Image 1 (cartoon, rainbow, N blue to C red):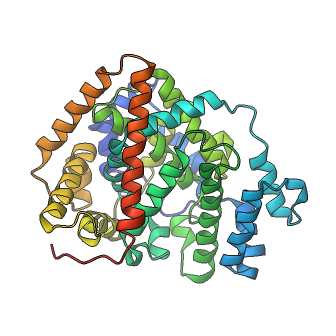
Image 2 (image 1 turned 135 degrees about the vertical axis):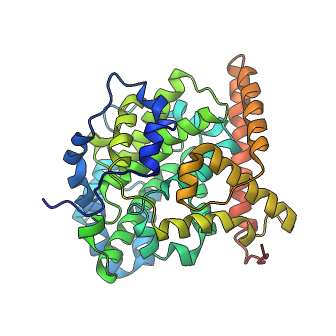
Length: 401
């Protein structure tokens, strides 16, 4: 099999991450450093995709329309229709998979993982925005589907709102139980991915020989690692100290989500060590940031000026500068320069937030304290979701920078 052009030795910011950045500490957790030559065996994943979901799109969404297709899916999910009663063979296959919980699923670990996501409160969303999302722009290829689906024209506000909605949906208490909000949100997202992939291949000049298949299985795994391993690294860097049980739960949580999203089970890591190795292979075979990456990064940086909250220009400037400070704190000089991100004078603010988080961690003395922190963090996240889904959903008043 001829490998796509994107499969190349990374000598840019990702390489620097493992040689001089936080990746150095991650590699110390492994018994031995991974051999990058082994990554070649994973390269065929760049051509593999969720064939079941794509066939559902072909058979239902494209023939009957997106609206009718989604209404049909909603009715199945809301009524918890048994797979045996579904006539379409591909919908039947999908529902057979998701309705039969895997033998390895542990409900207690699921709750440990989701509770960690909630208890970090607004800090969770800072890590996701300023580390996971912005850091993901350092890879040119994984972001190409965003360009081909018009993400730049739709704007960073829409993507942030959708990611926030997904995050809050899936991290709620028992949200992943069948029939609950998080479970349904994952299945809808799986089909939205397929819908995007089918339409990109059908209606654009996508070049698979350069980038592989859009939303392929290796990039889907990388996204899963962004929400699990990279998120965990970010939490630790801003002062949180997750317990061993929380860490185990976080990877179990995202393994189940990845399973529901159609990522092959064998690819999904069970432990932090397995996730580190998987991230190592993916990052060090990525082409570096390009003009599209920089455009996406700048769109995210400009986002505070394109929304209704905060209201005043000075508040928007403070918010933008705060995000930039977190970008530099998480990603480091090399990565931020590769994305052409301007510097911020708000570095001390980040250090103050780290100190506050460390104090909060030390104040957790018992289960009651822990539960209070989880509940408080959840309220913070729901408040921010309300801002994006209601206040910022209205037509924004553009504010000049």
